[in-house]
Length: 297
Image (cartoon, rainbow, N blue to C red; front, side):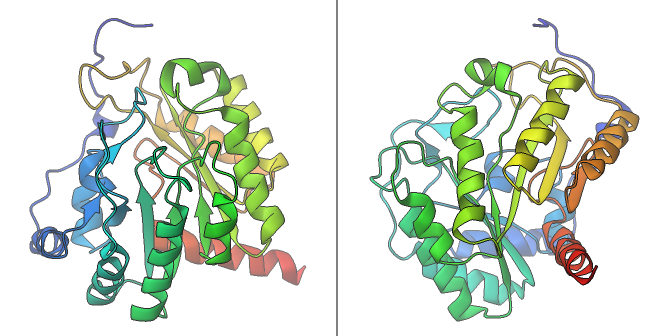
């Protein structure tokens, strides 16, 4: 592993957020007392997304029960569940007039269902307040939480996302609280329970993986019938986090995208700044169109 921090190349730099729409999104999130993964994970795309009033809402509190070495979200004693949070999310989505919303969460290993019921209640609140909004969930792995996946699937999100994050060899180093094949099984189970729900997963590159390992992850995801794959550059949030092994050139991302499309994914997003929720609404529309075209053949 490298011991020096690499200098960011020009293709990874983004502008600081300054727009009026960005400030309006900040004010709405504060007024509704909502957490966002955009802020907590220090996402480089926050300025662009919030200027468009696109925000990824993070439910179940702001403190995670795990300590992944790539993630900037606080770890420790989790917050008490807020029973009013689902309704506030629904109201915020309606106020923002979103066509598509992404709802994610911290890991809640302390809860019997890992927070699955809270996810379901949030989906229901969005449907009530903004019935025309399509809903994407990005859930934890629900490790050792029997029945949790079923609870979320029965609430019928339009997209079910769960990220593998990295290649299996690096799990003990990067994602020690998780299990690669448990995450794959989650994605497969979603499709078995409801084939109409789009499934999605993503990984970061620049953590020390090889191209061959990335290709194997693609094959594993297709074996689980995953529709949409995202691949983005890992960025080190703070000096205490896993170091960046290398900055992957945009040409290599283009190669990954071509390979993934060749393996049969309906949708692929691969670029240095790709993140799970980046351009999620536009991607969903393309994903739906791709399925319709496939069914028409």
